View (cartoon, rainbow, N blue to C red):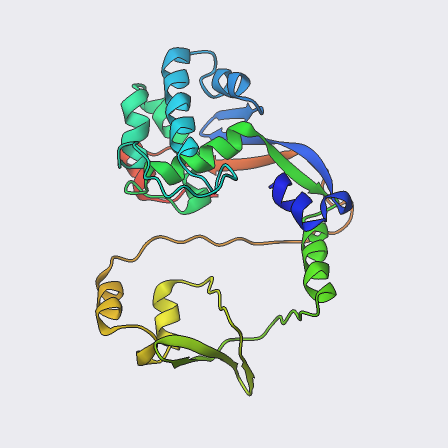
Length: 260
């Protein structure tokens, strides 16, 4: 992220401070420091060190296969790590059910389930092992800096503007319609579910075979965030992210999102 922010020229506008991840699991509260060695010791409470080191080795092997994640040119090479689920990855290296449950605590960050790819689980886990940081005084400072880049180049930002339809030509999206406004561009990026996108797009935008395949695919889980601005001085500020989960059996932990 730092490389991207420096490339965009906004790093000098941001004030970044270290944060901590805190797992609240039943009666246990475990603060996870940054750095691999300290993280292993904390998450295992000083136990299962060999298993945890083998597990973290596997996480970094998976993460090392992704060029974009490591800011490397894409070589087009397929990774050699086995195509297993997050649950299988944890169980492969960790024998203690309680520790398995604890390591599964981040699945809600990517709306994970028992079938989530081990690769996605590894990427998120490595990010947290490397360290968690916060923007001071708030994340709004980053949003403002990125908005300024767009407006400085002549772009516009539209909020509270619902996309009502898409237009297509020759099998490609040609315009986005927002009520009585119409926008054309060379490239369009959608950040909604593919099912919702298909409802907006005309039939000719996607092939019938693709539509059928999407309609038959199982629905994945989802997540949402609430961004609340508290009254000044209402609560003391803590440099911690809290991940709170109920006590569930290991197999249940992967079939339901963490309750936060």
